[in-house]
Image (cartoon, rainbow, N blue to C red; front, side, top):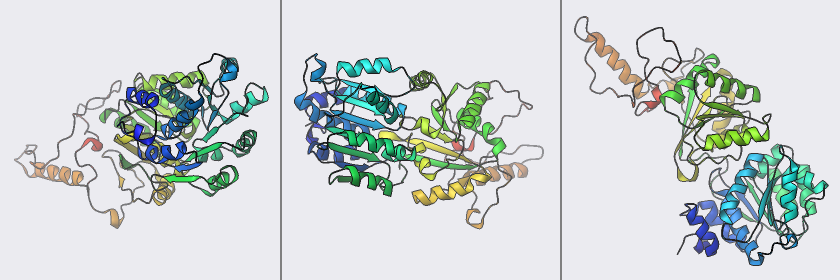
Length: 456
């Protein structure tokens, strides 16, 4: 039996999943789908990239299809499922997934978000659609203009509810919830079960089932984390070095502000790396085109703010770089959750300057993990003070030192034989395109490509 069929999903849906390459349900899907199919309200916490969209959309579609109608009459396609999201990108991603899931069902869907003309959205709503995915503000715009009715909604989903509260949408959410029928199913997905989230659940949910697939505020075990100590003025040089030496063909670089995003993106382009900026000041059309290029592999580096990147679903994204530490420790978890998704492995590298040490301590406290601070040869920060607990020299550094000492002890005038225990670099270090070099001497390969880097 198909693993998804065993959860209670019909052949129309499981066949569509097979075509999309879905083989086994994730933990959140296995836990949530049966409860939603049973009609329970659901309060769910799960890490980013664990398949949350399918966890609420698949059972929602299963319930909607019972009364689905192939009629062309708009009256036969009232809004029955409403999904609210904090960002345009997340809304668009959910809508794309929905399109794949309903391939074999006579259901209609549309997505509502700001930054684009409302006319096409209005036309879709008036043509009738059972599933509406929307950002809070644009939904209220359509409500005000009487383009949408919410009195037939059977299922409402609050996706990334914690982020919506952080962004100040609580009053708008309450207003929308009060427009919905009292007899409905409410599904709330959040990264945490914080007090505000529990208060929201208490006010608008009916004895919800609770699902938590991983301890709150933990990082994905599939993500290899590196914290690199560096001086602020050296960050751009090291960023380029990492992208080139680690052969990052696809990477998201996070900055705290829109200004930083623009500056870093421009600098990477000057260094002949294909990069683009993504933040709230960009037009919606520009943002969609940038995301499309990045997903298609036409863009190597996406430089983004936290809000702009929230909800991005890039299949098997291998790298994430925190060019600047986030303003909130929780955002660190969300940032590195862009990689290592759906069982794939990923690498998250954070560049920490002297002023960001306090935030680093907050991050360690939040995730309950002691992350080692590392340094890159040639980029050692001036502010670094080695503590007794950190005095152990990395194995790679020990081997390099042994090699240098072996060279000095070798034959007169010679460079010395190669130490048989020396760790070989994973790849040769090539000249950076477009950069003038003052010396013919090849630079050492970035330490992160050395086998066993960081082993104490």
